[in-house]
Amino acid sequence: MTLEQLQQIFPNARSLAGVFICALNEAMLNRKIDTPKRAAAFLAQVGHESGELRYVRELGSYQYLSKYDTGILAARLGNTPEADGDGQKYRGRGLIQITGRRNYLACSQALFGDDRLLGQPQLLEQPQWACESAAWFWQSNGLNELADKDQFTTITRRINGGLNGLEDRLQVWARAKSVLCVS
Image 1 (tube, one colour):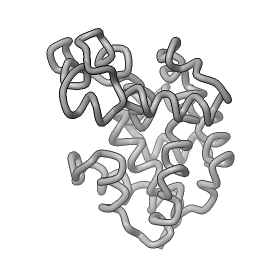
Image 2 (cartoon, helix red, strand yellow):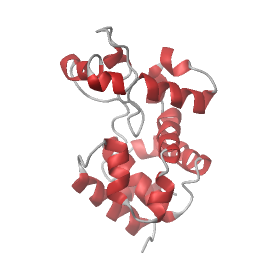
Image 3 (tube, one colour):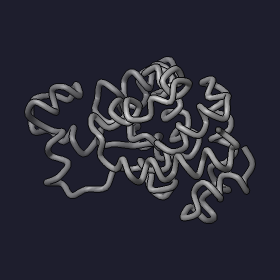
């Protein structure tokens, strides 16, 4: 994918496209997001989740992020049951918003072969790791195969847990398919 193509897909990214283009291409290659159909679906999801590359860290107040700190959602994400700041520490990061201690650990083991993201979660805010973590999540959740079958709403559910932002995701997908010549 070229810089010009990325800017056409993410018109609001502006100069950020240049910051991410090499890391995105490398991450996509590493995780077999290697056909126009797969790339279009991946970029559509990344585009929505990151606000077209503008956000690599989940926005939200301390109160909002406390939902990840205690309770059922926190437990599902592998965060400790105590109100100890896990919600803030393991907030969504990267272009697909890796969230929760369990996901950070799995991502860290896949990317680095160790648990460094547990101590340095902000690494996922760097372009290389923001892209690699998104591509890892994509591949490890079988999303290439779903993209091959045009199962876009299923992909959205796997990433988001629901259909939040579906209209925006579909708009970015349509742009990506047009730019990448996917029929």
